[in-house]
Amino acid sequence: MKKSSSLILGAALVALASGCANMTPTQQRAVSGGAIGATGGAVLGAVAGGNPAVGAAVGGAVGAGVGAALPQIKNAINGN
Image (cartoon, rainbow, N blue to C red; front, side, top):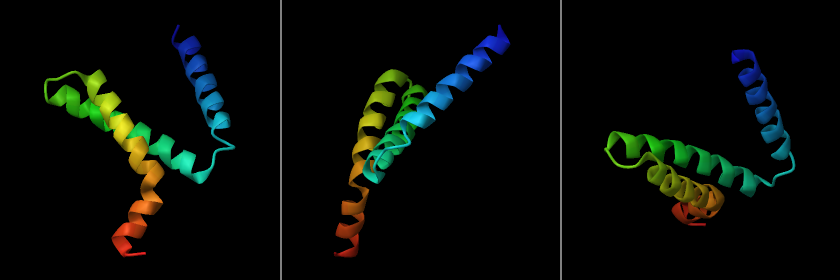
């Protein structure tokens, strides 16, 4: 059972990585930001005694938005 779940996980990771191969930098930042935000939101939701799923959803949405808008945010901070 453990070997089959490892194979399934490996196949999923390969499929995920190949699906991201043709993404633009903005799309890559949005996906990365969403993943990081969802992880952080789930952890904070669980630690705060709330619902980790709600924390993951909110964190993922915020992270994806910030990731996609990062160049514009940097330009605004630098005065460009």
